[in-house]
Amino acid sequence: MSSTARQTQADSVAPTSPTSRSPFLRAARGETPDHTPVWFMRQAGRSLPEYRAARQGVGMLESCMTPELIVELTLQPVRRYAVDAAIFFSDIVLPLKAVGVDLDIKPGVGPVVASPVRTLADVEAIPDLEASHVPFVIEAVRGLVDELGETPLIGFAGAPFTVASYLVEGGPSKDHARTKAMMFGAPDVWAALLAKIAGIAAAFLEIQVRAGASAVQLFDSWAGALTPSDYRDFVMPHSASVLRQVGELGVPRIHFGVGTGNLLPLMGEAGADVVGVDWRTPLDRALDLVGPRAVQGNLDPTLVFAPTEVMTARAAEVIEAGRAARGHIFNLGHGVIPSTDPDQLKRLTEFVQGYRPAG
Ligand code: 1CP
Image (cartoon, rainbow, N blue to C red; front, side, top):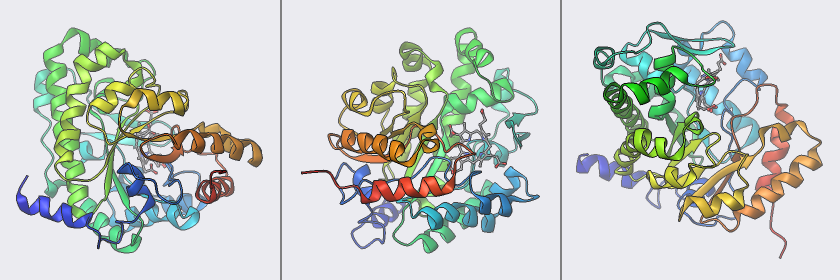
């Protein structure tokens, strides 16, 4: 990276920057802010009536390519919940669409790829991502940073394994059988595919950070399908490459996956500043696994359907466990479930931000 780019980044986290005292960024850097910061994965989403209204008649990918809509959909949960961070409205397959891969996000299904990747030639046909592919992302990030003021914007990308699963399967998959068949049976094609996606993910994150995002999250949602040794041999080097490239920009890097209790040490070692923990691993146990890093998580997303006092009692346990961490960002253990009651999520946000430990 050029020294100019590094300078720009140094400026974006300098003490004079509006976000520099943000509880979210302080916790991500391993400090202890006045309150435990909170945001929600998939907060910019389907549980909000104003989201459904704004998306009326507009396809998911079209929404991700329209700057005014990206800004509006990213801001909606910040306005409603006053969470400590915004997450950029996009999708993990958007960069593939932007470079020309024929895919769609089908309502009620998820990403669907017209011609799944099978061969080395298929991999080589995927162009690398340039800023010129995603002008709408740059415009939206700039607009958002102006609007958000002291609230940091999190940029994100899908990690190589999770994105590869959509490209190889052609759509959502429970067992990732074809994906793993390629991983085990055609390791040269697999390595080329993961290296290609890693390059695209790193470029997508860099574009968001250069436009003003204050932190990034790498989503490896489906990495929990792997054993630790397969993760280490076939996947981790590529995720590490993404995190290393973004590391040069000087913003905190969050690394998250689902069902990754066995992988947490490796996900930390891959180069994360913050390791996202799903709800299946108790947070105090996760602290022993992630090494000297901050953690993010990890209330069971179904607890927002429980009576408020049950939800807040469990949230208090998560916050208390997080006090022993080198930095703790409160979140759910995975995304907000679409049928979640926004009022209950608001109560959860207020509880976390208002919580002060006894003694
Ligand atoms: O029409 C709609 O409203 C489609 C629903 C939807 C939304 C709101 C999809 C389809 N993607 C998104 C936005 C989205 N996707 C965000 C926005 C910001 C926010 O978090 O609020 C983010 C961060 C993502 C990331 C994403 N997309 C992930 C990783 C996070 C996770 O939940 O594990 C994954 C796996 C996807 C793929 C995807 N996109 C959409 C769906 C339904 C899916 C999952 C499909 C499957 O089960 O494989």
